[in-house]
Amino acid sequence: MTNFSAKEFEEALRIGRPPTIARLFPNSRALIVSGKFIDRAMLAKGRAIAMAANGRSSIIIRGVLRAAQRANAALIVEIAKSEGGASAYCAVNYWNIARQVDAVCNELGITVPVAVHADHYGIKCDTDIAAAEIEIPTLFETGVTSIAIDASHLPDDQNLLASIALNRCVPDWAGLETEVGEIKGKEGLSTVSEALFLILHSPNTTYPAPSTAPPATARNASSRLPTIPEPPRPTWPPPCK
Image (cartoon, rainbow, N blue to C red; front, side, top):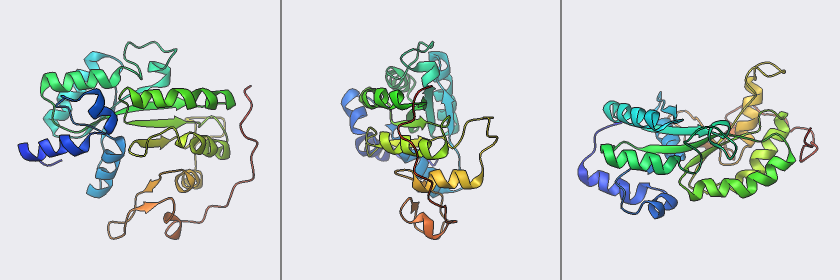
């Protein structure tokens, strides 16, 4: 990141915060932004990464925000469904993490951009889809600014269809992540072709393009990337086992 003036910071607060954040925290000085903004900024800068810190406790949230401010770096604070979902074990959860991040940012005078991410929102069968359609909108209503739809336990085609089915539950301004494959799953490590299949066919995809080319999207990336064959028609939704 680069340093910016007080005037530029005021403008960032005015136009950079998602509508839900502006409504929830109308008098806040915290620059909570969409995860999509951070992703696009990294692509524009090139050879850049942003830390996604697991905010399981208020101590962690305070520590990573102080570190990000010292480093003058954008930050993603996240919590996974297994840690902060409806049946999870952490005091920090999907529905209060944004409020905690906002409070600490204001207390400590944090000015770097921060995204609030609902990580690993797991989908394993059809009943999970139905529940997610009700639950996911409530995450954004309470301050989450990006989400990872994790259907990686399913075959690639059903993984993709889960992301497409739930895309309508994610606001246009928000970040949407999908999981390529289950870590150390029974099928082994994910391949490049599997990753490209999900990248090119997932909704709202932004593929890292050469710096001389316009940003690649799911609609135009296929002209510069390997052709991925269409999958066989799957059984959908997948039955719960």
